[in-house]
Image (cartoon, rainbow, N blue to C red):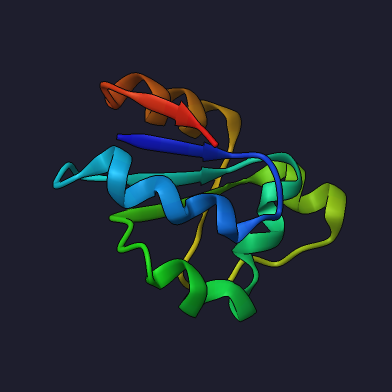
Length: 92
């Protein structure tokens, strides 16, 4: 299951365990959500046990953010692949 977050509100992730259950889950940060890609947010995102965290490259560049080691940078083709490979995409 792919969770899509477009705002810098880590609190929105508290619904993830209820929605994902035991399913594999990844997080895609877009727009202002990429503020959560910073190293300072790594421990906060680790609470949710995502199998992968990705941040939109263009949004990172526009905001001058360097992603931390917990987060992979995703160009548009990568984002398309993520969306297509997951059976469910949920926007938070």
